Image 1 (spheres, rainbow, N blue to C red):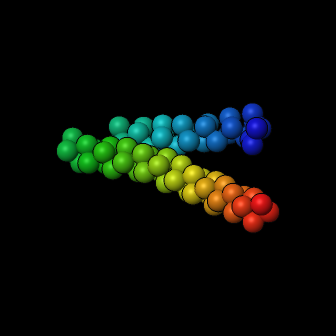
Image 2: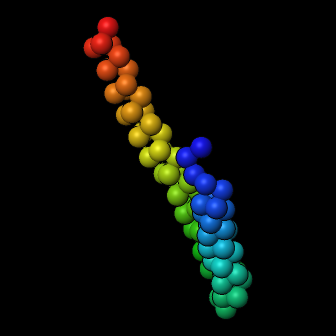
Length: 77
């Protein structure tokens, strides 16, 4: 297991608190509904792209390690 339970909890807690604070602030914003909608969609897009970017970076790094290991094993043969 790569991460401790405490680290995983803090990562999720920070993420959820950030999202919560963003949308509470958006709820209290004194602007027309279309402005709130614009910010809400922008916030959701940002959340999704952060998660996809994190997964892509992790997968690319794991692929690099796997390719290096495969090449090392091929040379040893």
